[in-house]
Image 1: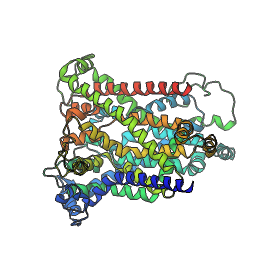
Image 2: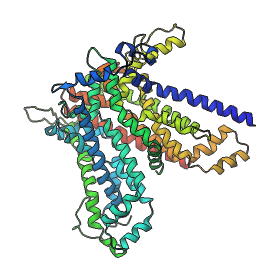
Image 3: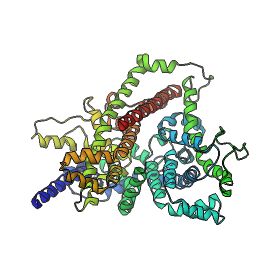
Image 4: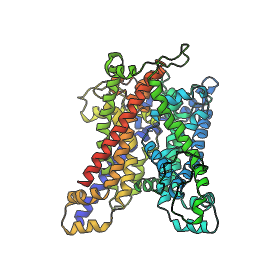
Length: 279
Length: 325
């Protein structure tokens, strides 16, 4: 019996290790490639070998993006940070308030309005992108145009709604009886007790806004307002392609999120998963 | 569930109040704060999600280009008819539709199945599972624009591409180097592979969380009944996570139809086989980028939307039916 268990464990570890190696290989390839000369990157299995490592590629990214016509690398970082930051913070505020109003307050038409929100959850933003571009053509090449369509988010409202619905109502009732209004109760009692759902929505919103590609590609051409992923796409299309530099660009694009993820991953994985399982 | 009179959506607090059972006093004072609190999100959703859809329908019936001098002409359903019958439009459009369906039909079962398999493996009582979970989840934080660039090099057509090196190694040099993204036979498969790599971890952690909610005594009972591993999986695991699986399948379906970023980048910068990988959204943006034709793009958008809603509804009905049966 014991040997059978050990055997099963060894088999389990073996399968998991192979799968983990396959999943990690492209990430390792990216990071190690960012420190190697281009010829060493595109070199069959040689691409995995840590040879000729240097920071040259990183210097090249900064050097080739250092004029007004090409834009500046730090400018792109700042654009992406501003866009994602505003979307996450404002999004948390307005979508959580709406989720609370739908879950806990009673008002006329609430259930009908909420039904519309639920229907909007399945509408992909992509299907609104073209007409929205038409509606906002006067706002092209601004940071604002990359932010406002994503502030209100039906899925976020829905996640907040399910979380607030299943939270403990008696504390709230006590606060209400003590004379706190609906808004006060939400700000002082409900929100501080709902950190996991705020974290989940923040994470999901940040991931999708940091990676935005379609909408900025439709609405921006000015380097002063373009976000990182779009520039990364353009950078990899330059001829001749300098793969080392492209990988350095890519590493800088993902490294901040990767570090955040590794630092908070226990929390990150659990909060995202538990919010989804509540369905 | 308590509103009895039809109320105008988004109406102010000044609207007629409906007769309702008297609740505790403070409930009645909630109307104004409730409307103020939900208003920003509701207005945002109406303006940026609902209104564009109406605009798309209107645009699709006219002839609209940016910067056109003449006023737009009313064309009726011309663009819709052309999309399906005029070879100039229907050729690429129907091919894109087919590509979307191919992508979805492969990705939905494969990605969900793989996510389920990984989650079951990670749900064992062995030590060190969080480490493996980290590896499987990591690609999820990668923006698709970056994923496309990394995999473009893996799929590189020359001998120096990673995948070609791998095939060369496995077949001991017999198989020649393939142009994975350029050949019509393998281009879609390549896009599917990189998409699954990026997305599977997300489904995996949702399923894993559901697996951990299954009460252990159900497995113990199955063990007592001498159920083997497969029977336990079939009769305990799958029923225990059925609702989560349905959620994951619906989510994956919507994502599968939205595929765009990787397609666009790989066509534009890696000369991927356009015919084989273009999708409906790619068609819509090309109509804008290449032809400045908002009406055509809007017609495509409307068809895209109708397809997504139809598939979601059909899937729901089917899955619910099986649930009850």
